[in-house]
Image (cartoon, rainbow, N blue to C red):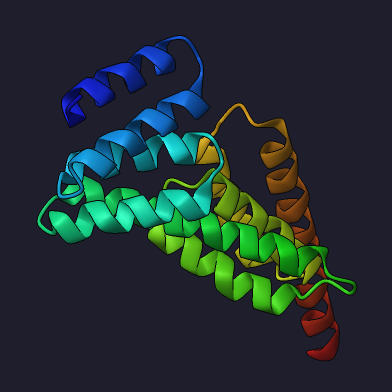
Length: 181
């Protein structure tokens, strides 16, 4: 059996919804033809769809190493790395007490690496709101809504932080007026 035959088998399993077997056959193709960048790439995509992020990263790195000029491989690797950063941020946010400032730094990196990551922008909005940084929370909530306009939690977050931001600005203006009297 050659690599292409293994790839065809893998796609048969994908069409039947069996991603575990698809990954197995992609890896068989890679064993037979380890220098085929496209085999590593499609294996990485299937691993990512199955939530196997560490394995997805390894195959994405191999694909890019074998074909460094391929923009799609580079972008895919960035999105996988961004997803891994989101997982790291989730751990920081789940800590007791949550490590909000450290999570923000990681989430900013994730949003830069994958500018289409709803989760990165939404989580940044939530964290900034927790830190009472409403301007930044509003910006990130707005971006999350732009990426997924039907996401009700993102719409609620945007409305809440925007309201708090306006209230805070109104209070600051009122204090300035009072001081200037």
